[in-house]
Length: 164
Ligand SMILES: [Zn+2]
Image (cartoon, rainbow, N blue to C red; front, side, top):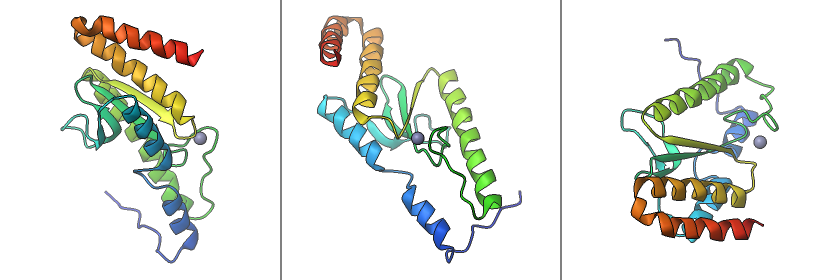
């Protein structure tokens, strides 16, 4: 397969774009992780949900089979903020398109294997993401262990109160 050469490092615009769009430990990811941790949830970070899949999810709840992705507005082409770099379009166009295609393939493979896939744009409020993720985790926990249901429902009721 023909490889498109990476533009020379001397291209300052490209370097800035890449630095500004780090792929892991981004500020939104860290904010969400901190909130989830504060709510008592435990999870894997930057972890491959399925060994056969090369993709890693940003936050993974292995027991509940929930994979969370905080998608960067640039790398995953958010409809509100994505702007195609003006230089080296031949490089960025296919690279970013493959990225989005890989996202969809990853989603399908995970869902087919019984995973719940949660994707959020990094521009979303971290608090809102954390509440949504926790709700999914509690629901999955409840459905997998009926004995916990009472406790889980109590916690969910507490959150509904908080959200009012
Ligand atoms: Zn965005």
